[in-house]
Image 1 (cartoon, rainbow, N blue to C red):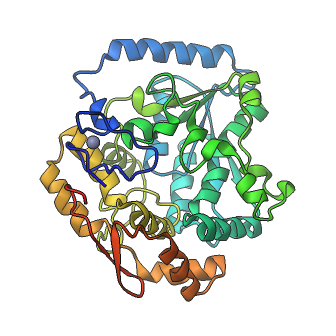
Image 2: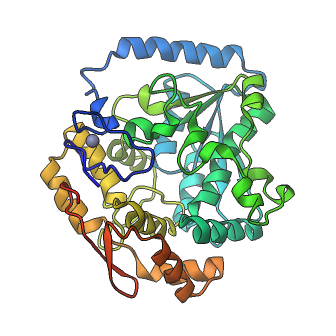
Image 3: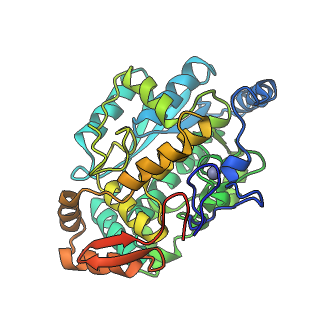
Length: 376
Ligand SMILES: [Zn+2]
């Protein structure tokens, strides 16, 4: 495992690409705001807005997938106020015993600003079973819920014939997830080809005993259906200045967003502003850290370093202190939610540890063998 020579992106991240220079893809292709040709992007944006207005068959120009969090709040308001488009919001809700009160409040806060919103709720029975299946067989419970989340928006777009979908940031330009890279950095039509979604194929669920009739909301529309409905998916960060966790968090907090009280010794998201609508993500990020050697602090730090707000050394310090932290009290809640024992939880986690990167030093305790910023 090696590190990008500019930020702290790691070569063990799935679907990452490194240039010969030693830079990760996002750093290699990074342009500061003064280097970006905004005139060209504005022109492209005008074409997209025109495309949406002229292909609008339902009255809605576009869809924004929302949780009510910082990114979706900023997106929805910006699209309405600055792009002059009529958006329909689509929210895939967590089950009542998973969604946080903070998540409920934030979604209500956003809708109250004057939006139509379709809320989709999947059967909690299938939802929990799919989470358990994804956790046991992939070490990633969110694989199941991300299928439902990312499928929900294009499913509504196809159903309502709404031609344009906005998502926030491109995982290719912000994280280096090359699977989703489209014809240009703002093109999101390859979104379903991320490492987690793997093209939207649900064979892994049917092979696990899930009947198609029970997982309809997890099925991403086919390329043919998307093409027939002429759907364009676009990443907002390409068209907006200063679209970052930091800026969006500030923007949304000033407009009523309720955030977590940051406690980086239990949760590496030291801003306390991401993934606010439920809390089990904390465990998922910890398992991801043990699989690949990078946690939630790395994700934030990399963007901060690239933007010039933080030095690489400051980033190393934060990542060393916070990346491997998690909240043990959530593990028990998670086990009870997906109905497994604590022993089974740690047995599953043990099976996913990257032994080249970590040494087991006790039950549920792992020591990194790598040095942050240097590698192994
Ligand atoms: Zn980098």
